[in-house]
Image 1 (cartoon, rainbow, N blue to C red):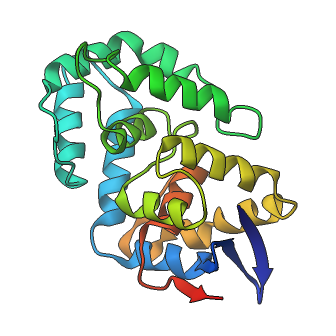
Image 2 (image 1 turned 120 degrees about the vertical axis):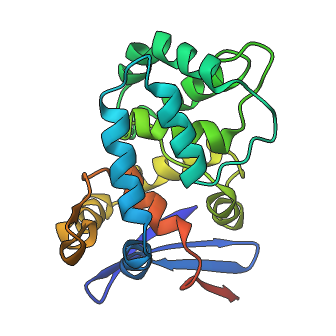
Length: 223
């Protein structure tokens, strides 16, 4: 289980599992992500592309996402078929509740329903691929998983799966320090890079992705 720790005008995510303590410095992780050349530009472009979807452009946007996020198709699927299925289900996907303490089970069940042979019959979409697609379609509902995020979750004792991410998020929402933590990570100073003229939307789940994504400043201690 992860706890939110407030220390020295900063916040840390800290969890102990089987004698290992993983502590993540939120300010440094967000800063590391924001200064990496190109990442904010890609995210900004993707949010713009997916905010106003049309049947004749969604496949193009999906290909752009997969190229920029370097998503490898472990199982072949037709992007045009996926785009058509997403358009049919777009209103239902966007009607799902935002991530919160009482909605994580609903979101997890919806994620699994879409993943398991539903969007493309006969093909289970990889959870990493689907999480990124669904995040940019509905950024306040779906968080992002990748191999690095899943490794963090496993160290903290969660399942290395989308279910693990949902349980992790629920623990954050239940933490007594959550409100202060959320206000801190959504501070415009962490979101906006003025000198590059980029202003990212205030999506909490994207900021959590930034906190979990980079591994340059993790503090992993054996106790």
